[in-house]
Length: 115
Image 1 (cartoon, rainbow, N blue to C red):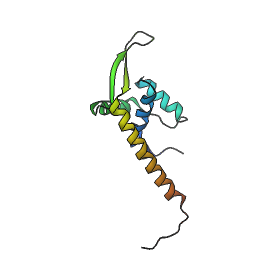
Image 2: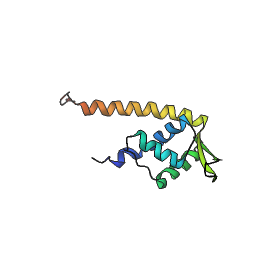
Image 3: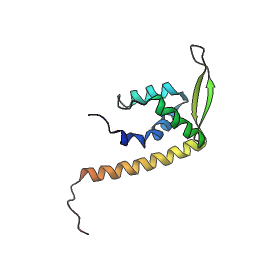
Image 4: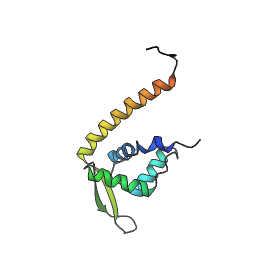
């Protein structure tokens, strides 16, 4: 079964910020790490990732810098800022509240409630 993309789009910033909380990463590294950690569920394209990163950068949640790569060509690394850490905490709390509410509804079992 394929994952409904509408479920993924709203959570992608949260997932990227969580990766960057652990360490600074460059784009391809984020794509591969997300794919691996999600057991091959999330297949983020560069055309989706970079606009998302630029938006986070404009909001001051991430910053970017040039770093050396093994092959010699510089890579653009992204770093979660102090403001980004605070925003991530809020997003995680919000996500947990949302996920709990959805799970409660999906469990069912309370029948029809009269109003």
